[in-house]
Image (cartoon, rainbow, N blue to C red; front, side, top):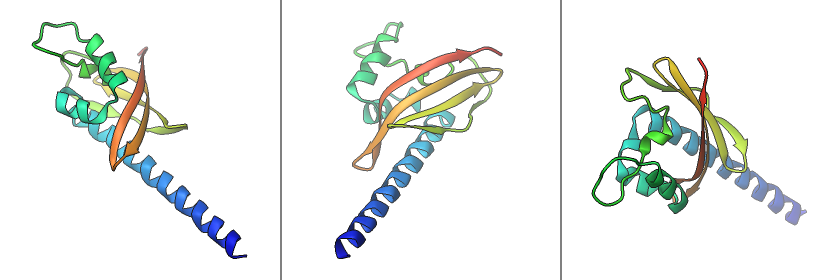
Length: 133
């Protein structure tokens, strides 16, 4: 009986931890996009895996000193826009989250693979697809 109670409490603790991680990641996505934090290389270094940083560096096609990151890959990518908004963020399972970013009249669909480590969200991969108007 005590063992079953322990397992039940343990299962609840895991479910609550997952719910907290999910909320933290969803809040992170809204904050990253709507506050345009993806333009800050220090932010990217803190929240992106080496794989994602390499992907962002490979997409950077301007002259720069040292390593630069194409943070715009984490948004639609218009040069000039008046507003940027994130649609509903959906948990796709296995650490994948999907959402749509709207920049003025343009939009793109995103999937990111993220987890929380030591209280910090880390992006391990992303996929971007432009959507037709």
